[in-house]
Length: 262
Image 1: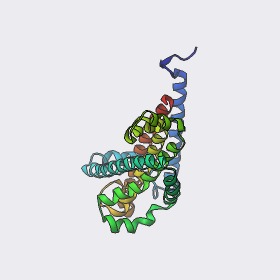
Image 2: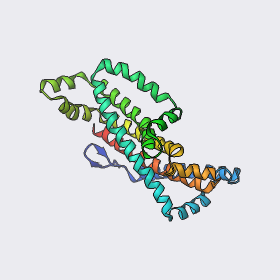
Image 3: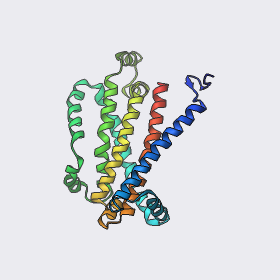
Image 4: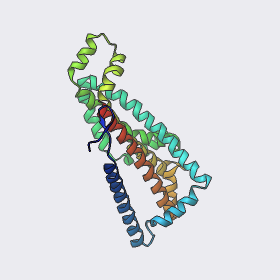
């Protein structure tokens, strides 16, 4: 029996395929849990705590106000860092993409900066921003800004020239051309850039918390390592991984839907 389309142009997923996907997800998760258990047993819990003790410790940890304070600190810094990375990166990518010479000069500089380990810039960031929220946000923007800019810039440069000619023939202003032509046409690549910028912004914020803050999940992770509290550090890593995987899965779905609609 053929699949029945749920919406025009988008075929529905058959129950057999849904079961297959669920089995694949369970197989991957189960394999990771088994590897986690094996690593915990092999290290005797010295480097990593096995799954069940970690979940037990995490269950108790989430009942404390301290955990939610650190989580809120990370979430706030990350939201600000990712927001700045997205807004500045999209603006730079759209503007540079329309100016060929500026793009040819700027793109290698951004690509070179992207390859630099940002931890090496840690002393400079501390000198400029000091300790606290500003340093964490700066680390997040340093990590997330470049991929958003490069993806957007590349999408604009590969647009069919007929779109820009049509915008000029209709007398659209620069701002109207941006929002009515460039952004819709580049949306799939923009979403991909935002997805990568999301992950790297989170990484940057966590690094900033590890080096220049006394609040947040990064600080909690370093504190657990310093005190050799393996259940604490393992629980924090688990929270970070789960949040990152769920967010990236959601953004991947959005990207696929945008690509399909485009």
